Length: 68
Image (cartoon, rainbow, N blue to C red; front, side, top):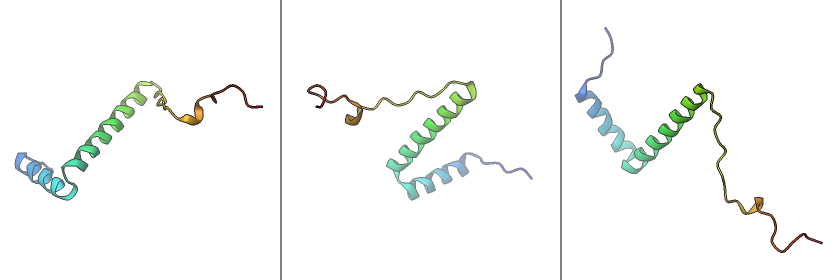
């Protein structure tokens, strides 16, 4: 007997997940899941992910010229 989920079953599961995690956390989980799927698809297509451009102060050259 195959395992099938209909509309009412999916709604019940969604309500339980919302009760456990809350609305805000479910949104974050969905966003992270979307990023993961996007990265996975890019890796299958052979595209290399671009490193994030950070504004880290340690990578900036020192101001005021070279140190003596």
